[in-house]
Each structure stands twice: as C-alpha cells, then as structure tokens.
Length: 461
Image (cartoon, rainbow, N blue to C red):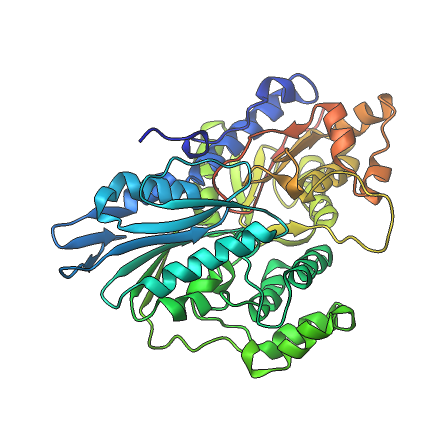
C-alpha cells in the first residue's frame, strides 16, 4: 500500500514566500523549528513504532494482547489524525485485521483495503456525520466477547461522528455544536456538554463494544491530555450532567436551548454509563510535550536557548497572541524574563475565538488572530512569532495559521491594511494573505492542537 498525501510527513509548503520579507533570518529559524514540530506530530510513525503482530496476538506499546482461536480484530475511529493511524495499522497488521470503520474529514482521502472509510464534516456535523456514527454503532454491536477493538478516535471526532440523544433532532444537535463553538469556552467544557447529548459519546460506544477488549490509539489534542476529552466515546466519562448544565448556565446558553435538549439533560438518560467492568486501555501516541521536545532539539541546533513556555495554554486567541508577544518583546528589549537568543515554544493548548453578537465577519481562525494581535504588540522589535493549528486548517480555513514579526505592522500600514479592524471583525485572513504571511500545509493527518514558536532576536545597537 502506497501512502497517501495525508500520511506523508507534513510541512509548511510556502517557505519561500514566507521568508521573502520581514525579518527573514529569524523567520527561517522559526519555520524550520515549526516544521520539526509538525513532523513529530505524525501519528503514522508513532503507530508503526508501537504496534506489531506476535505469534499469539498483537503487541501494542509493549503489551501483548493474545487472540484466542476465532477471535477477530476490528478498527474503528473518527477524527483529523485517524487516517495515518488506520493506514499504519493496515500496513503493520495486514490480514490480522478482520474489518473496521473510520470516518474522515471531507477532502481527506485514504486507500484502506480492510477498513471501511466514510467521509463527514468538521467543525460542524452534517447528516454524513450521523450516518458515520450509525456505522460505528453497527460495528460495535457486531463485536464478540473474544474480539479486540482498536479504536483510533482523535481530535474532531465529535463533529465527524455525531449521533444525537433520543428525542433530539440532528438540526438541534448541530445548532448546539455551533452555539458551543461560538461561545469561546475551552474544549473540555464544550465536550462536557456534547457528550451528555449523544448516543455514542461519554463512553457509550465502549459500553456497546463490551465485553470485547478496547485499545485506544490516539493523538492528544487537548491541554493536560484528558482522555475523556480526547477519545470520549471509548473511555469512562469524568464529567457529570450537573457540570454540563452549569457550563451552559455560566455562558448564558441554557435559556437558548430547545426544549428537547433541556428535557434530555434533566432526564436520567443524560448520565454517562459506568465502564468499571469494561477492559479499556488507552495509549497516547503523540502529545504536545513530545512535540515540544522535538522542537527543543532543533532550536539548540540553530544556536538558540529553548524554553518550553507551556503545553496547556488556552484562551481567547488575541489575548494569547498578545501574551506571548509581550513576553518575547520584554525578553528582547529588557532581557527579562529571558535573554535575547531564546526561542519560546508551546504545543498542545488551544486558542479560541468568541463570536459575540451579530455583524459582518470575515474568514480567519484563532492562529491568524493571535498572529495579528502579536504583530500589533511587536511593532519595530526583532521578534518573530508563529501560530499554527497542527491539523493544517486554522478555523476551518485553508491556512494552518500565520507568522508575524516586528515589521508586520509597518508593512500592513504601508499596504493600507487595518490590522485592528481585521481583529474586531474576525477577518484576519484577508490582511495576512495580502502580506504573504499565511502558513500553508494542506491537511496534515494529525491534530495536536495549537503550536507556537517565538524567536527572540537581539535588539538593534
């Protein structure tokens, strides 16, 4: 089986354009470091290293799962990093795999021979997402007690596999997704609501698979590597219905819900199942910290001092952009808290954009907004910052994110571009495209959430 484009190492593809202007030397370093980080996100490579057939079964991350005579192996999954994992499993296990179903994002294509591939939509679910979720349920119901299920549910599966709770229509569930994503709340709180209005999330899919064994192979896309946020259909739920209702009330969304969802959340059916008797093992193939460690090595090779600033940073995109830019600016001009020649690194947190009220909004994403906010802070300073969504699609756009430096604000002004206005109307993509500062990777086949690199240069003497 030849790898598809999505299973090859992902990279920023428009390096020449990005390094043709601005503080070029620092840009080259920032992009090289980011590309190393993107390579470290590769779930296919991690799966190949973790999984191997044995005489009596399958070895996964050093543990052997014995297969009795007649036992079958199934693969199921959904998510933005699922295809490379599933592809690697087919290449490694071959005819040990008896079947499976994975749901991929529209525009993604795989060449799987033993695993059925379905296409659905992200970041908002579609009818195809419902059909895909039903196929996962059908497979779960067909599994026998001696079988082994390898689940590769990764970031984005909440939209790609969407099965509303009884009494809730698809349209109502989709509107709930849109409402939650537009609120600006952290992904853990978004999922605490979504999993209690679902027939597969919150461990419900695992309940259907039982008593078969479940091994989750996944890529962490959340701060803190919280399992029931990463792969919640097949692990025990740590949230409660009361917490979900509290989140909705705190963000003033409870009174906006349709009666069907209110009725469901106040019924016993909203509670997640007890999986104490289900054999579930979860292996994190890639984490934000592991990605940062890879970038540390490249940073040192380039003569800089690396600082892993965070792997859990979450919040409003523009505030995160300003925060990182302020630290870099202070370090460059005042040698505090770090000295010039430092590179600030982070991967694994997630920025968000809160859309409040009505108005005319343009295209963009959290990484692009963070870059513009940073550019406004860095005006005139020898600093380069880069913000990237590792799945290759920042805010659902064709750009993975953006790069900015101390010359960006000046260049924008000379071109007649209003960066502050772009932030206010959530239209970051247009000015960044005009400046030639959008990061292009295409679909990467992974999702370790947001990655940032800030190169702190020496001030002019």
